[in-house]
Image 1 (cartoon, rainbow, N blue to C red):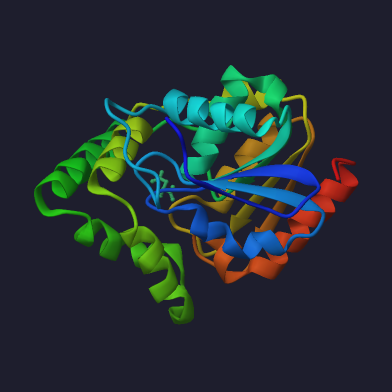
Image 2: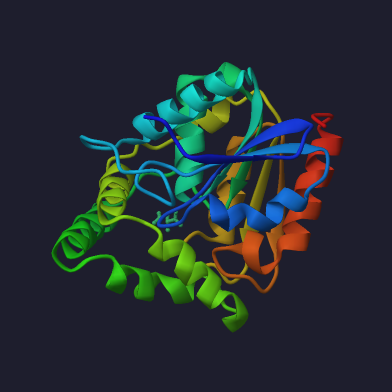
Length: 250
Ligand code: MLT
């Protein structure tokens, strides 16, 4: 699968992996972080990448990303995953640990879905198949951002998702494994970012992940919902820049 992607800036490569149902556009503000080569792909079925044939899994998303790194001749990148992108990042670390120079986890968690959450994913996939993406987009939007001024932008990003892409991602998320073992074994520096008004992933998720990691810094952003990198971009960008400096990755 060839992914559409943006490639901006020069310096330490960061592979930015977006969440559900979003696209590379959600990281537009992160390209302001200096001294970084920002690689921002659209996962299969999101943004401008068409859906893949066959079912998606976290492993397939991660494989597509490693292929992209290969195509770009990038041996090691800092892997940064937002929410579902975090699930993909942890899969990438499971399958190809040598490709990561560092790990950034934004509004995500390492646990698998509960049975109840899994059933809700399948129901949501049926809903998208029957009625399109509209109701999922509208129901998720208030959880993405608390500030009105970002709503239209985030809605547009969500609306660039294809129904097949969303259904594939819902099923892939439902089937994802627990990744606590990946975090326990991680041997590169990590940064975890969470926000205090996020109801999709919580501060407790961030703290639990920190407990699994040897070397991890946690930054809790105040006043943002799920997309702290949009609503509080400066704080998130500063946290990433200082992480790169302190971990001597930059
Ligand atoms: C995301 O933002 O990627 C999703 O909300 C994550 C999830 O539903 O688990």
